[in-house]
Amino acid sequence: MSNEYFLRQIGLSEREVKVYLDIAAHPETTVLAISKRIDIPRTTLYTLLDALESAGRIHIKKVNKTTIVSIVEPQNLLLELRSEQTRINELLAYTQKFIEQMHTLAKTSALRPTVNIYADESGIKQLLWNILHAKDGVLLGFSPGTLEDIVDRRFAEEWRVEFKRRKLRNKIILNTSVPLDWSEVPEFLTNYVEARTLEDQKISFEREVFIYDDVLAIVAKKDEPEQYGIEISDSLLVDSYKQLFFFLWKHVAKPI
Image 1: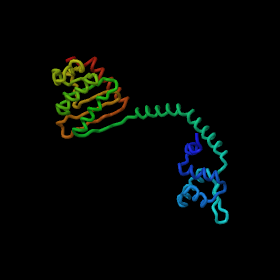
Image 2: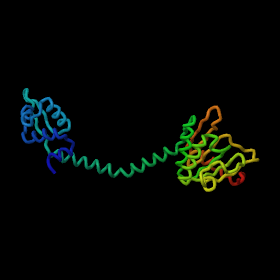
Image 3: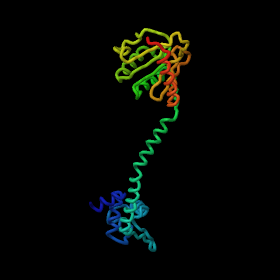
């Protein structure tokens, strides 16, 4: 390791290193003398000297009208570095605890209820695409019809293709008993969808309801005056909807 490298590692720029080493080699020197020796304009040199003084590396004093410059006792660097080493050791010792607490904060934040509202066709499509990121791999739902009631046929089929590619599963309770023939995506309806109906139970849903992970999404039909979608992230609310879904699935809804 060279002196130049060492000084750069403690924060000096290349020009500051050059000035510092010149001052070290010529104790009690003047600004004019430094400028001549290392060929730096005095206006630039004063800026460098101010930076070195602020960093605690040199002394600047006035003797009559002459500016005298010298380096601060190098032994002070050892004390500084030992102090810095102590600070770094303390930070390192706390780092793992800090990491754990940041993860806890993230989890706590994730548990806070959030509501996102989506408007018009593009918004609804974004809401539906979000569903494809379901982490537990299962999508529950209540439906008055099919996906085509809220989006166009082309997007609905593209969504189903991606749903199948991600190996997700859909359990859906329909208002009425309809043939499972609403998709032309191979094996989608036979291998990725389970459907039951509430026909004749006097229970109906006027909105598409999707339940996955800790999210409840509700979407209005596209033929309504204003189509919208609401995406609610709330673990307690979603858990209640899941309980309702599985109660109806097991005890009320009939297989199609």
